[in-house]
Amino acid sequence: MDARFRSGAGETPPPGTPIHRHRLATRLWHWVNAVAVIILLGSGLGISNAHPRLYWGRYGANFDPAWLQLPRFPAWITIPASYNLAISRRWHLFFALVLGFGLLAHLLWSLANRHIQRDLRVRRSDVTPAHLWADLRAHWNFRFHDPERPRAYNAFQKLSYVAILFVALPLAILTGLALSPAMDAAWPWLLDLFGGRQSARSIHFLAATGIALFTIVHLALVILAGPVNEVRSMLTGWWRVPE
Image (tube, one colour):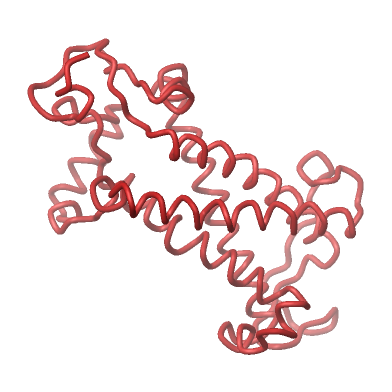
């Protein structure tokens, strides 16, 4: 294999050229994170069914004005399928640990191997109106990869990954810790940081909604970009340059 195609440098690789695109650490974290996020969202909806109202501030109960009234989510999308708050919490808390420690390990490893600095750093040129408009037109025309830099992330990928890795996931984890009675007793300042228990609960829901929307859009783009090629690259690391 030509080293230029492994590193992403050099001339434009022809269609069908295999390129090593994802490192082992990235692939492992992707699949562990995928399982954790799906279970956390399902169990979180099960927990929401216990009291589907969101408030701001320290307190909130049935007769207090809620800023959002959530629907009762159907059994096919919750974990477990039958309403059981205790079991939903057990699933949620266990996979919250998987998500949190997995994210920490992934970020530390990505800093060590310079994946974040090399692939995810948002440069000033990435967010110019002309560049964003060009990326939007390319997506609209189902062109998801730069043929001259097939390993490079486009501006929308960088912005969405940065928002998820450094905003939505940390917010979901920190507000989840704040909502834990054990953490509340050990670190009472954590709830104060978010303005109270009900504010932390609302922020937790908004962060989870952002993660869910990112997951839906991500899956849709994988299907549009060629699911066999994209999934193979996340299993083996090798991706083929499309036509």
